[in-house]
Length: 139
Length: 85
Image 1 (tube, rainbow over the protein chains, first blue to last red):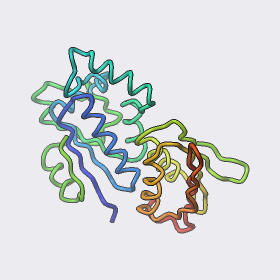
Image 2: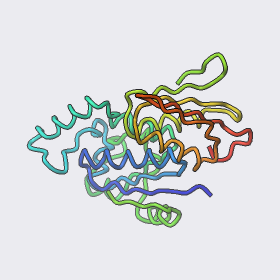
Image 3: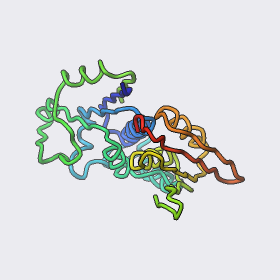
């Protein structure tokens, strides 16, 4: 059976979203099945136009830190978050959206990028995914 | 990604960094058919050893890893009986 990885994306911070997608895409590339479960502030990144809106988890400096790191990332040719997301979908990764977060934060399906979301679900689905996984991360 | 006259699938990852060479290799593997050969060229150091790891994990055949002064070339063969790619 194919090995599986499940990643909870709880943070909406720019750098942590990057880490989540790099690991998710890496695991897909290594032949694993991958589910990314977006909850709390992580889910805000799946709002239309929200993918790049996160702050840096450290040294954000009112946006100056993020601007600097973006510049550096462009210089060394790091793939954009948009590109990482489309790679993830192309390689068959599953994106799960937490419906409880949607209720708390007043997020409607039409606010989200429905075309990339595989399923709207809650903790039961997450636990089921984790039980089948050999790698689980909380980011 | 392109296909040359010998039906070899070419993936150019020169100048790309983590995780792009690995991801582009995987995309090419997914699209390839049994018996196809894929050539990936790049210069991201870690990918030179990680693409072969993925090849092993996917049950494919690693034909060669060529190291040149400022880049590497990895050749992969998709077995006739495709396993899990």
